[in-house]
Length: 320
Image (cartoon, rainbow, N blue to C red; front, top):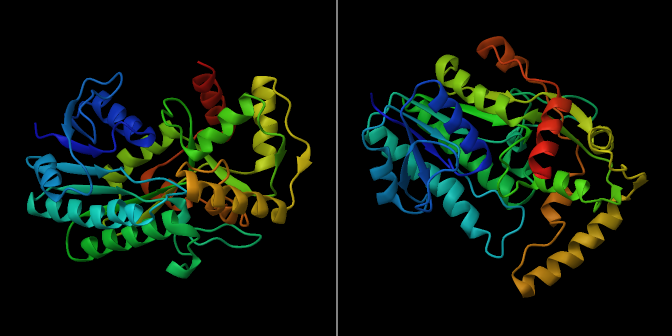
């Protein structure tokens, strides 16, 4: 059996994709930047980096399919060029290697940030969106990377794109920005909230969505993998009911959050350490990132769990 390559297998979503594929009987080749085994999984580990073309060619060689989950997911970077090198140039190099290796299928993990949002409504895969709508370097780099994936699909490489919303759950190692918010809440370090909103989805459902896209997705198509649209206030209220930690009752005006982020960014430019509240995150919060996942349900059979279950899994993980 030829192996299936999973990039970013030591990360949050990538780990869950590798776990699910392994459980379903696939021979998984887990690509990581380090040489340590992927926690808890009995998979083949290959060391490679998105900025090293030769390492990518070696990682893909002999594989039947690729799940490209890896990305530089930072809302602040001292040198933003690093995000474009990994997310855009790295995606192009990996897809070139996949084409040369004649893989049968590629699933590319994009982000809900590349979906168009509608004030007072729900965005979907058809909502008009452009590079000018992207807030910050992370979203811009992922949008450009998604365009690269679409280019390869148009040229004949069977690439299917998935756009996860805000995955939460267990094994959020780093953690992700959303996971960090949950962890801060559980520590009692969340005194207030912004008027914003997210679509919360269990990371295990996101992993299953990747497999469904692999099995049923149409090349060149995008599929939103999400579950439930909630305001940040509602998310904290659910977390409070699950954990017993009091939810914040004070809403911060946007301009206050902006000033705090500007001050934190100025300090970070000198220290080189990420700010607690990156400006990109604050700017993203101006819009409620609410979407519908009807297409994934209709074409893939995607049926995610309620957000409360996802948040419960996240609480249990971080408390452990």
